[in-house]
Length: 171
Image 1 (spheres, helix red, strand yellow):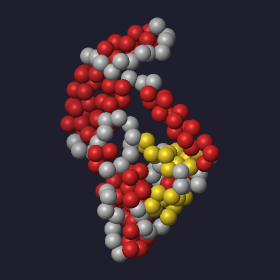
Image 2: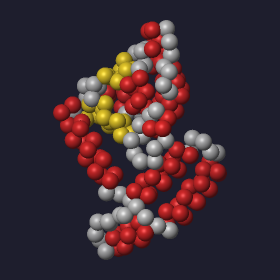
Image 3: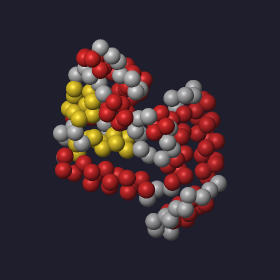
Image 4: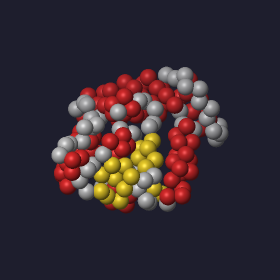
């Protein structure tokens, strides 16, 4: 799951039913989580006398805050999609029958963007957990400079000025 989380391409989960235990931990490893209005999520491991073992004790507090993560993990409560949305566990909730279409629509939106810029943005955002603010800002500035030297930057800027869709080539 760490390798999934460390991918520099967007990893998007579409939660269409139950995401309990390892299933939710898999979704927590994704950059973005969309859910069906019928989705249910939770970490029921303490019911078995164990703890989550695939990263929930580390990822969940970073995502929704320590107190809420402790509550969900030690109570083993299962929550619905609207509750997950309200605590920041999922990015958006869609009607069950539209979940995949809306997820694919979002994927296509991201695919229309500069791939090097998307990768660099994910990299910088991930570094925000690892670096103090001043070091993170310096890192972002360095990566910004690198991205500004790409053909994709030139194409994106030219397309913007010419009021047309950019044709990125990932170079």
